[in-house]
Length: 91
Image (cartoon, rainbow, N blue to C red; front, side, top):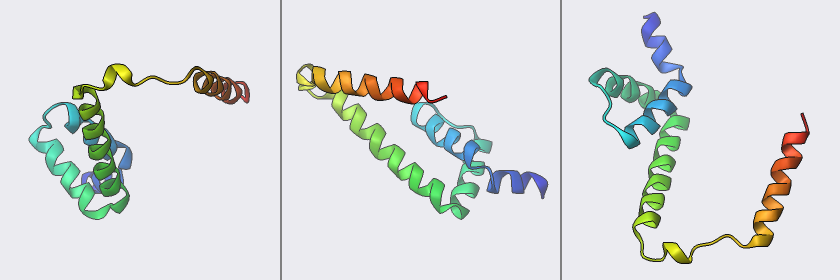
């Protein structure tokens, strides 16, 4: 029963398996553990759906012919860099 509790309450492991599933095949045990967890965890179930949508969008972006035209504006890059540095300097 202790192993079952570890599966049911371990969202960190579930999200790891969700991401791993995007890039490689899960073992039989991992598939079962993930299914058990997702059966009882609505948060990870939602994460799984969102992760799939994001991965599909990224794949589509890389395959599309418009990728050379996609660029971040220099002002946005500078603002983003400043925000990152602000957050890093808070600690």
